[in-house]
Image (cartoon, rainbow, N blue to C red):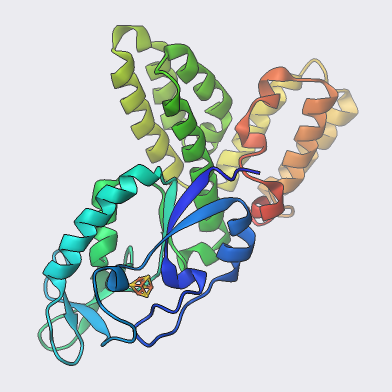
Length: 316
Ligand code: SF4
């Protein structure tokens, strides 16, 4: 079990009664299912910046790119109070070594996107980012961040969880001394995972690792981290996954019997046409990897990017 994964989370999603009305927004998937594999660092910006429970509700007003945080009835401007606290809090979070953050959707403090911002006539546009969420993302631009609403979409959920597991392994790599050999090992095991997100990044990262001798190790690590996180932000598609599966088959050419080859091609075809989920060809592929002891593929995180109990590839 990967207990080492730490995620920041909006406290109300854990069932804490911190909302303005004294309630919570418990999300059972996050506590009972994902919570088995990660530990959470709860953050409630409104309570932690000094506002009580219950409290007056608030909203974002003004310029959607730089909104103010104002209470709905008494029009008290809380922007500076929230910002001063947020800057301090993100500096503290630096020491937590987070692998991601789950925000409460739509909140003027915690929401990561499409938060309502009201203009002077009281009309909202869904273009804002919560004050704390903005401070957090500015400080940790590469960290996987999602909100509870978006995580109900199976593809977004799969992508987020895959990214936090990769980030955890990346942090483990960083905790060792920066050696080119360590980076090569990391890259080798993530190759097919990267390919399933972005063939372009797969090529760029391959070149970066190969050309590493001309650049300082520190610079290579930095460039690699940037490319890795950007690659994984791009969604996998059925087409990209089918491409990876066919690529994998290349490693078995000499081992698979005609029947096995035929069966694998059929299953990949069924996946490509939407008749079976990704878990089906992956399971068969895993079977042959073990049967023929294919060492390169055995090491590929693409085959087991996150715990199977999360059932994330049953919908991909
Ligand atoms: S949305 Fe954010 S500020 Fe509001 S109660 Fe939840 S954690 Fe606190």
